[in-house]
Image (tube, rainbow, N blue to C red; front, side):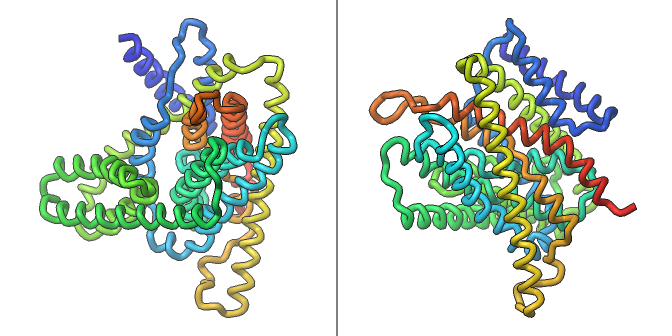
Length: 414
């Protein structure tokens, strides 16, 4: 009964703080994280264990599906070059540079461990990006790029993470095998997503007059799609994103306006509750890791986390502006794949650069680190990696999250 009481307490706190955040004009994820940290330090509160598999299964499918469902497919396709650059190239670049900095800066951080840390912090988070940028008046292009990046980059980060952990546990890293695995995961996820979208489309066209059954099926399918994809060892993230994009196109053809509003209201409530719970849980994890960490090293490792946050931000800024220049150059040369609508102006480039928040995916991956190696010995530097990951998530969400609205206002012409 005690666990149910904690969940109800968290939900009450979450709803109350969301209302307060709206009144004081602070992005509610930031207020929820701070509240989670404060609640986590309550002495009588039992430690809340988060199973990363549960996080991925319960939270990721509906959040990714909702984001993919609401994204403009036409604009997604138009900006696919920028989205691919940020969600694939930038993920691996960030992994490498964080690994280099961590290896030379943090004592006893071997190359394999450094790459584990880099992979954990390489991807931006769909939940954080959409929650903090919502209502800021971003252009459709910037919104599409940020959402598209966050939808796809989880798959890239998870692949980098798997190979980095394998290297720590003694498995040799072979570049061509890693590349082949990445392509197979993405292609397999794409295939599962298309099959599930076509299957759902076939069923919905025959039962769409039964609104309850249709909405129930649409709520259930993202979970089923994710489970099937993961069961056959392909990307569940990509499968759910493709499912959302497919059903989004179908909804305009099949569903009447009234039904779409009803469905949207239900999804809005679910997404609101899941978003809130995620950010509270991020905050709750910090005291738990803090208490298990050597207190003499706390400020030193906070410093390491700050440096890594700055490195990740600088890499993102450089990559965004290099891509902006390459798009302009390709357009000036008259290349067919460089459309005018895909070009980035200075305002969108700065906003996209500053919007690279980390969140629940990084947290779930970090907490999912194996406790032991294959020989039974403890996973080296596990607490340090988890601690740094959580602090970097907090730095990006609080630092970039609080300053992003100010930046958008400054860049918006009056």
